Length: 209
Image 1 (cartoon, helix red, strand yellow):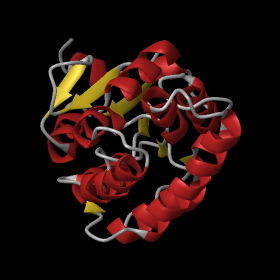
Image 2 (cartoon, helix red, strand yellow; image 1 turned 180 degrees about the vertical axis):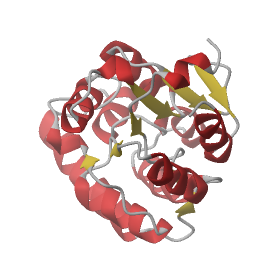
Image 3 (cartoon, helix red, strand yellow; image 1 turned 180 degrees about the horizontal axis):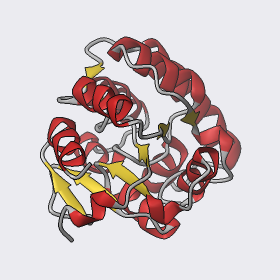
């Protein structure tokens, strides 16, 4: 699709990690520590951990762990991530993007697979305060399940087809499409729109309004 898709956008549902916030270094630090403790191939884990929920990733690499252990490890993992925000910054173009949405009076919120504590920690470190936040504990399942994006659209008071999902991961792309929303993808040729960064998306949104 071309930028004509942007003309019909009435609200935005924005992913956090890797999209609005550059947290890759922090994410990988904590996951590498977990991989070493559980004798998991670090590089294989790092290749797929971005965008997925912690418990899903743990089950994928250690299917032998029982659900009680997974739940305890995931809770501890989220706590460690919440404490480790060194190097977490706003993603390229994020401030311009947020300012443009305000100027265009386009409602938006964050939809993330992080829990509220972690999301607030990373957004705070990046200096970004979203109007609203859908965290993983707000829904029955995280991405790639569409529940977060469906709830986000509901909170904006819009049909999902009128919301633009902004993502950077395969799990997020799957969630947005399953929710029935067009998806703008950063740094990949997937999705309905492809953009290099949020600054480019801001400029393209402004150009059609």
